[in-house]
Image (tube, rainbow, N blue to C red; front, side, top):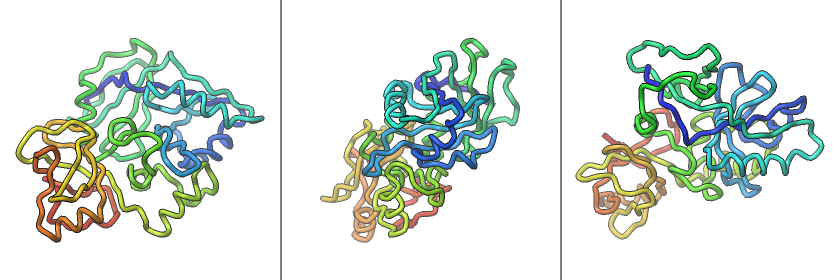
Length: 288
């Protein structure tokens, strides 16, 4: 089981007697039903329903951990503080904890220090587990790049790499497909917009897996086109595989017209992630 240290991730701790109702009232995911030993995808949205922060939420001894992009941790602490009001909670970055990811390869478990906390990644079983550890608890045997290649190969997007913050709706970032939105729990910030998109089926844009068939993966942000149509932009990539934000209706028109999809001059095969249930324009575009 390879383990990769993720220095681009950090932990924000939310603790205190009101930690659960505080988070339940503002996050997209359901923290009341969050079991011990699971890291669940969640987000804090703008009032307009767009993703400000995405993270993995797990229970800790005195509250909850939010596993977030390291460069966004301080901003997340500040933003959560604005919602705290009279709630009895403490929100702070935890610099004592590192983050790692472990996923199945040969079925063996890596040796780690006893104080390392293992929780399963609730997005997909194939993503394996997240590890939270004190500095120096163990040595990794895989690279951060190897983890992202695994994530990209599964079709799982990540904020800041595959979509811009405050620019994408949860449906566009596949949060509805990966357990990151609870449509039954009641109100949270941006909930009305997200619920409307769900019930009206108005999510026309999705992040899709891409296979680059005849050249290197283009840089993130490269326009994806078919003929004169602009379909979207590329996200992160590893080798010949990547992710891209795509307008499904325009992709359907391109496929019906027999127009090849390209990104920066490279032929791009687009498909639907294996875990996804949303309608896809045509199976003829399925990626590799």
